[in-house]
Length: 569
Image 1: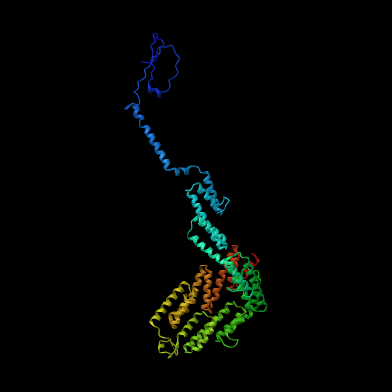
Image 2: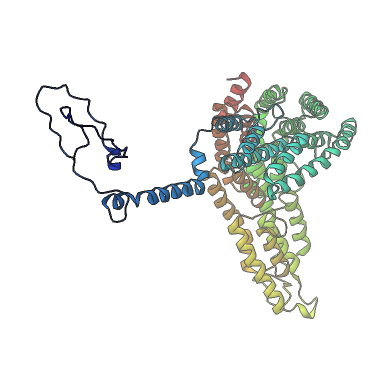
């Protein structure tokens, strides 16, 4: 039945009880507005009855009963996930202040503004970033990088002689890095530098006293002492002024030597000045005067060299008079102390004297042999041939002088025998020869003392002067030195090549190959000087030029590069 009353019903009205109506219709859309009457009879349509919702087993109950627990479960899971990942979620939120501070800190670090007190240094900004987010790795790593930069700057400051600055930056580095072996090493170096600086005053006093006494060069001279001060404290004005005074004094002595025609002294003073002050303003004029003097003496020099070579061929090695090879080559060196031909000539004289000494040993004339070897030692004290002959003479004794001396003797040794060696001595000799060969392969020819190939071979020969292996090894050192020289030159290691050339000059002073090797090394130094000058390194170019000048003073490129450096091009 419909709950609506027919408008045409005229019957008595009955009381209608209020009802809640169909609860299921709560979700139904609102009723449509009434339609105007069209005059036709109205019809009422009974709605389909609904089963009560919310009761167990009804369709409404099945559809909505599980929804609320599911929603509650999702809410719980979402809250748990937010709680567990709150750090990551926090990182996704905008952090304008932190990012700004971190960016400024990194910019300050790159600009080298490491520490300060105005709030703009890298250290202060990274610390502010850490204060904003204590667990942020970027901020903490930034402080570590500041500490490393402070450590590097402290090391550089120490090398530059700024000890107080180095100590201050090392302390900051220790605070930021928490210590470490590098900081401990730097602290030790700073302490050592402080002690060295305390000695600076004493060194300056010693240098001033040496200068007053006229002692200008050498480790204990005024120049060497002032250099020690400047190495520890490059900005020491007193030492710099003192070094200038030493340079002026050396230049004055060189000019005075030229005026008195003492070429040897003049050349020595110029070399000392160049080593002490490569950029001294007096050097260019002194070099020009030196070249002019050499040119004037060239005729006399050529004559002395020619006469010395002829005297060698004629067998007039040494002795009284001025017409011996020794006298002529000494005269040549007096005209040009750096002349390589004159030095080689003296080396040939030493070789000839050594050959004569060996002949005297063969003849049993120890006295004559010793005199000849002493003359050779005065000209070439480190000659390999000389050392072998000296060892041979020292180990040989006159026949019959001792019963224990009965032993084998070298062929041609008249009246001289070598003492019999024990098994222990033979083992020692074999060990020394083995070590000498290893030192030769490693390039330890003349140094270190006692462990060089030269010293080891000589020690072996001092026990057994006629040992063939030791003698051949010693006399073969010049050839090994030349190999090391060429290897070092090909690798561009000019300092090592120079050391090998010096070794060759000592071991074989009369070797004709030295002139060519000197020119090769001089050319390499000139090439390096050209490269340094092209890069704008004028100081380095001057030093390389000086090394080339010592090797080949008359090389045409030496004069050209000297003019370019003097002219500023």
